[in-house]
Length: 106
Image 1: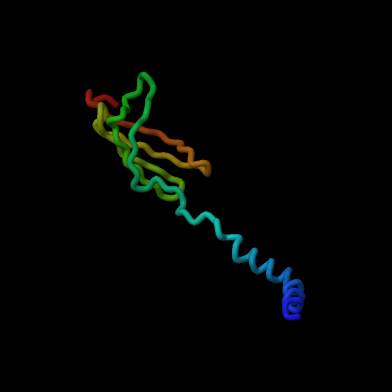
Image 2: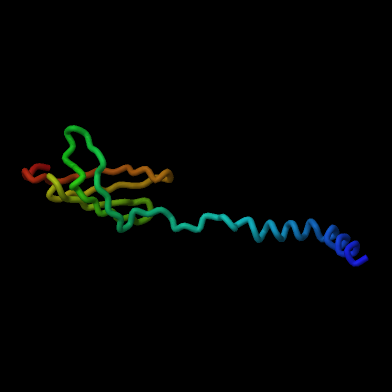
């Protein structure tokens, strides 16, 4: 008799319990990672164009504030360089750069 009573009570509360379980579980696998940022990250080039001066010896030190990005870079044939630009919603970078090479050319 007790089991029958429990089943009726469970059936009566089914929708409420289902909603409750859904609410508790809907964020179980929600993304909790921090927002993507280039702040304090360091990179080197994997490849460059034939006329490019940046090499795998060039190290870029990136910074970011909102969607604005900038970096200092040097190494290889680069004495000092800077880039500045933006990062869009797809994390694609759009920037301009300027540097001085070991021959004193910019």
